[in-house]
Length: 367
Image (cartoon, rainbow, N blue to C red):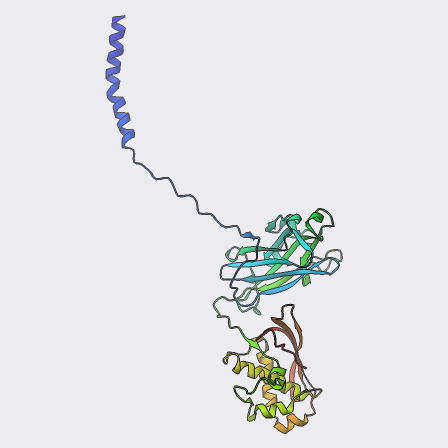
């Protein structure tokens, strides 16, 4: 027994330096700081539940949101800043949002079935919404660097997105009715995704990515009635000038109204743009969407005299924006049709443009 005790003590004595060495190695191990938490990568399609406050580049695109029978129940709006694309649903009346599905990218890449119909359940933008929350506005924010575009030389950036925006919608009068009613699909118009299938009415739209390097100039216009028949407007900042002919306010007012004199209509419309250009917009150029037409009409008017403007000339001239003022009165859509046969035979086109009103009080109406 004594021999065993001595052996244990001797073994413990021999192991003690080894134990001390092990412990000392552990104490000398360098302390490593814990790694930083991984940076959160934003989802390609982020959900925003209130209207985003964004300084969009260029112009936004707004289209109707329709149910199957063609009823407009609101709008969809597409716009971009330097980093994101924004896809916004905005319902009106007593229509409310359920699930929302969106796609933005190349036209060839939109999820389709074997019949060519869109498969909205496979759209990358997905958000479940409860009808009883009575939401009428919702936005997907999409990282531009994560999606692809088609080439289109008609876009200033040469980048065009194919946009499909679908939502489940329901109409009810108050929250207690939210579980009643019929849920139905709505799509952002204006054209069919699969026009070859009569049973499929899903729609989409094209959107040109806007150039954020070009400064946006807010250009607005007053009506010809404001410039030529406004008793409160005592003077213009300049005379109206077309080539060698110059018309002052007194002579211009004497020509009013245009009535059915087509030559006068051209004169008053071009004059209203020229006066808005120089008296309101500090000489900033007329929007490019109508500048070519304006320049051609300006060239034609430069060949006439004041007497021609009084008497009219025998030409076939239709230069008459027909205007629709939006609900809030801030934006108007102009269908500008120019046909100057005989004098400028190459003009025969229709353009759709948007011009901001200088004030809501003044309507840019061409009488």
